[in-house]
Image (cartoon, rainbow, N blue to C red; front, side):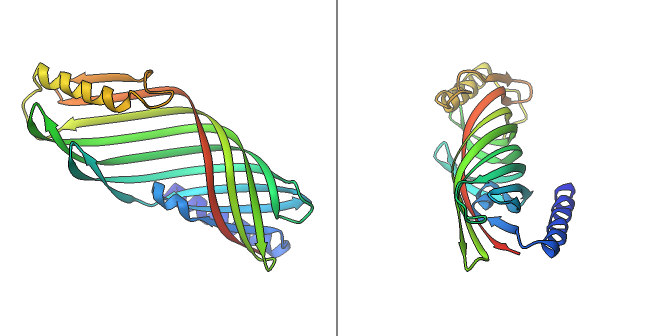
Length: 238
């Protein structure tokens, strides 16, 4: 609810600004739907070549079919985000052409679902939860086109980021009320180790915990995580 209130306040402030200036753009990034959120953005061009930008991601659940242990399962994904940046255009055309944009952002991503698999050659259902939270800074290179001076097509091509991130994963076997045997616990740990071994940066730095009494395995990472940002949005100039 707090993100929906933030969105309403954000759009209202843009409307007030638009009444005073024709240098306000409101945009929508369709690619964000794949990450379980609706992403809207605003740009205020306060000086030639210079703009302030704000992008807000509102949770909108998305369900994906995934394959685990040769079986199909459904995972629900949703996210929230806030990004604020300062944009400098390299061309003399107003709010169009190539630009450089340093920014700061916060992102929260959550996933959940029942993974169907096997453990010690027996069917197993894993109640699975995943979370990712990060504060980061970055600088993106992009290009924006204006069509008929009103419709904006914004492509952020390359944006290296530095993030301080918290990553959490927990899977609990709900197919049995009996505690795991040592063999089942060892197999669960081995499966997780194999899955994360080749993940860059965090693959060999994660903490893995197995609890035989709760039939669960969890993974945690807290630290530096680089990433790249790219995408596109479409908008209207008021």
